[in-house]
Length: 222
Ligand SMILES: N[C@@H](CCC(=O)N[C@@H](CS)C(=O)NCC(=O)O)C(=O)O
Image 1 (cartoon, rainbow, N blue to C red):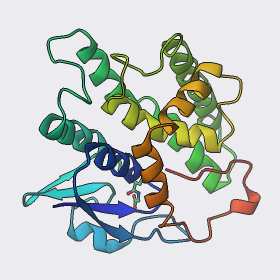
Image 2: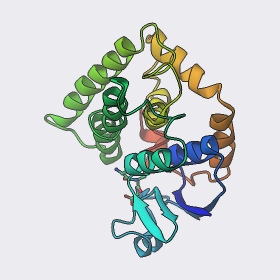
Image 3: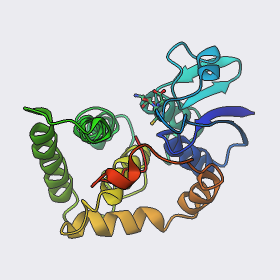
Image 4: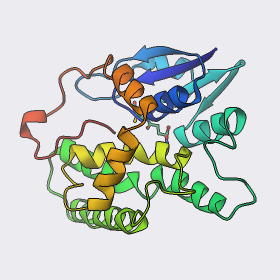
């Protein structure tokens, strides 16, 4: 049985979706964010030194990082179904989108969130984040032209990783005006496993949020 150490409203949602799609039995250990700082509770550091989520335990092995977890679980349980063949050129794109989701795509979104939470004037960061977010959405929009999925004409781990980026963009009303991204979001949401993950995640709501009423942004996730 796989254990998922899940922090409410976090990247861990990717792994709930993946586990649902894999059909693997799993158990959720739930951790609640501090309602003021939004940080994880210290108990999570007993599982992994950084105290962040997601973390899984499988066969006595502890694994953190949503990208590593995604690659590992797919390689182990559904390498042919949820990834392109290793010797196909789509495999490079598959790896690209998995890593893009947790590097170039998420960085400006987090910067924007943190600037907003801080509520302070910035010299550089806020504009930098906006510019980079526009690049990310533009790149995604172009890449999805004429496609239902990012790679290989089927659902893969790349889509599962990028779904969390879509969540953040959607929560910031940053998808309107990008028809390919909107269509892609609907395509992902049409999967039964996605809907099951949404229902599971909804069981772990966030408490009151820092500065919510002051914020122009309304980030649900970070
Ligand atoms: N790169 C890591 C990031 C993990 C991470 O920062 N998780 C956030 C939730 S989305 C977290 O645990 N935040 C709480 C904290 O830092 O205390 C991954 O992809 O899993």
